[in-house]
Length: 358
Ligand code: NAD
Image 1 (spheres, protein in one colour):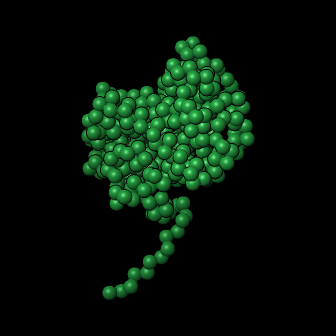
Image 2: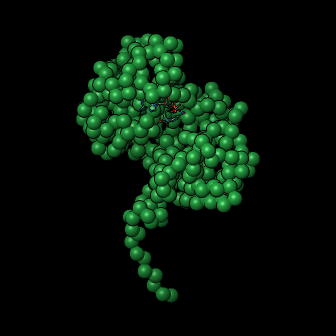
């Protein structure tokens, strides 16, 4: 038998296998179809805990490297989110390269559905940015491995908002000694699907809400319905508030905003809130701010999807999302006891559950 020389795999970002090794992905499926113009990538990150579940994103990526980077990062994020939420699900994600306003049609999504079906249930898809329930109906014509269909688990935003709300209360308990949000000042960035439900919970409990959004009608709506104070897009970082709740964009906790934020809690629905997890997670802790790890506190949406997969009721999903209170409290306690940032504690908890299952 001849010796096979095993070369060290390079970390070059153009080397797909090297990226898979670095981020520990199980499988990537590249899909193309000339007839429909479909170009998609499905990334299955880890199926130790169950089938990989994560949405499909349709985005006009500038190039394929960006699309690949996005799907690898997002699918790994789903593994962590599903693990820390105690779901019997692994992590995966799909991206369709294209303009969601002009390039959608039935044939494209049915072709995509066939590719999903070829994975035989190893990956279950759902909606993400640029994808509607109708698109998923087309996907469902070719595969049963899809959730978030009309008439099934429905809009996940109310469950996501509830999880964020209870997580926020756990942060308040740790920071102020009491989990009541009555009289607490909260800056909500983004009055979209989740933001609006969250503002209702906050208003009902007597919190004072400040809100920013780029979309005027949403601001008008929350101001009229809940009496929230409208603030400027940039002004939101300078407010004298107790809690900053990012519910719009990622990377809003960064070098610039950390010099300005006066809050002692950061807890919101947006994904990837820390621009650089390692750097900004540490600064936040050193400043005495409690940060609720984003993928843990915003897991209500995927919990809602799991309820559909596992044929559970919406009441079960709300109850499960309510457990985000305890998980948040545990992460904060461990963070304080070990002087380790909350994001790192959350990552460890997610990784430990997978290791144990292995
Ligand atoms: P959405 O699109 O309905 O709402 C986002 C809102 O943010 C919109 O109203 C938009 O106008 C606003 N916005 C955009 N740029 C802004 C800016 N610079 N400043 C202030 N507001 C701005 O989205 P959503 O479903 O409410 O989700 C909000 C965030 O939570 C997203 O980051 C999403 O990825 C994350 N998330 C959502 C869910 C869910 O169940 N919907 C689950 C997990 C995570």
